[in-house]
Image (cartoon, rainbow, N blue to C red):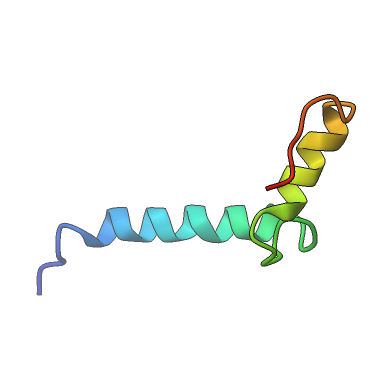
Length: 54
């Protein structure tokens, strides 16, 4: 039985995603806080110079 033409690219993409997921740290950005963590990091790195509170 012949293999589908999409099988090899699908395997490569799956392995790439799995490798990236395995190498990323478990803490940090894996939180659901509507990007408040990322916004706070920007404020801190910008020395609190320019931000607004909606």
